[in-house]
Image (cartoon, rainbow, N blue to C red; front, side, top):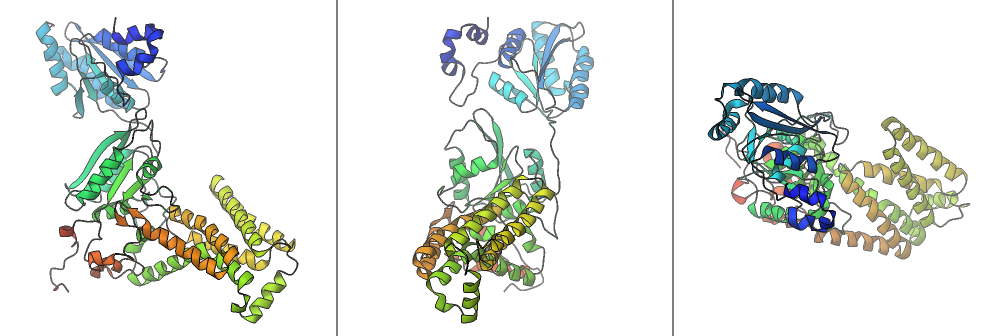
Length: 531
């Protein structure tokens, strides 16, 4: 009787399962047996009540003297590969091997391993854990009687969305394809854009139960080794049951979890990920999610769009200025309005002051209550529009905002000016390219409102100063978050050419600070003298 079957029969020893059969990473430490029936018995016990586990035992050889077992998870495999490259080859080709002896068993195994299968992507494993993991990953295992090894045949073929057009990070000019939930497909989309053998794909698994595949992609001679080492140490510094989405990794490796601002960039665009890798950054690709993480990241990266490098520098520079102004409006306009109307009305032109006062004549609430009520109403509309299906969500956001705003004004709950202020704030937040950064500004907006409602314009300036101090203190893998607006001298001020203003492409000859010092130059001219 196998050790595994003995444990299943003795329920009193259940609390010793982890110590006797598993290590701290939940890996099954039982070695494979030379007896096929014992291996099958162990697999049957592990996959008990798993109706999607398909298995088959059948004989091969001239006299059908050798028993073979195959197992896989239904619909996670490509059935054509199993039928044409595996079963047909085993049943037909193996008949040319001489009859069974103890020596011939090994020869059959070697024949199947080295040329008996019509596929090149096979490997050997020697433990039960590796065999089980292969099955759960979409591969097919092949066990031959008399040999304590398993042949793993790559037969992955699970259903996925494939490459589809993006629903976020939309651009007018540029590629339209986006990442999918399949890790290998995502790595191919990046390698298709960077045809360099120095582009490395370092793969690991995180999650003691999910065993989620994670790939780290970087260019070996461009990436800074200290950043790469730091990332690997952070990924190995924790153990977790499962990783369902790349956001799990993002939250576990970021430097300051208390900050409302993201320190790691996420993207669905392969061209953006490839561009970041060429700058010396590292892409973290997590299986089962279309969002790829990019490290290190600065606030400048979050204000950039993929389209910024596909259009002329003049229009892009103007657009970036608009984005930074929109970010200030998204965080500061409500608080600034409260500070002026409640504490410093003398700073407002007299006609405008009279108009604001007239519009608030019958409003029973203070200005700060008006603003907070309308801001919360718009937050509710935004959340409702996100959760509803696309066309309905857009309708709810527009119609709901108009109806609630108009009804609130007519009911004398808020003034028309407050509706305009809140609408400008909401529109400004949509102008920020990265949604995670937008959320950060939406949160700090209430901090500025609180300071402004208590101290007026001084409170407004104190709130802005507090946020700036916090941003200065942030780092992403030892890179200042506000770079290149701080510490730009580290790169000779070259990185300022791709900041608020985007200089012409021929002037951006050097990579950002993310890359190695000796690999900064990325553009040279053959027929022009470099300036």
